[in-house]
Length: 68
Picture 1: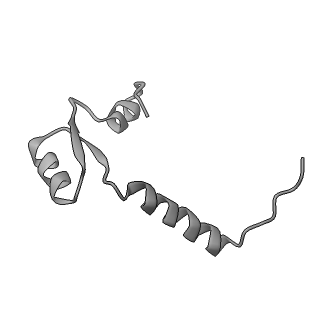
Picture 2: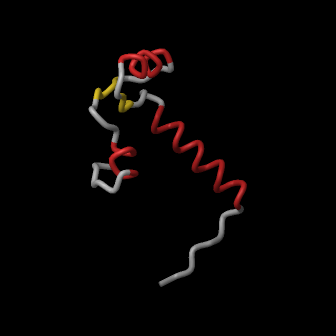
């Protein structure tokens, strides 16, 4: 397998950040567990919210298995 050329770290970091900004340009879907969180997400520009009993991060923190 051919070796890939190394991209300078500062250039690679910018490329990743620019790529993430491009992916999020249309808005994001936020997981929320309360009406207050939904309002905050809406005010921050969320494209949509998913109201859940528990967010996946909390389920994983407690040892459960949750979607990604």
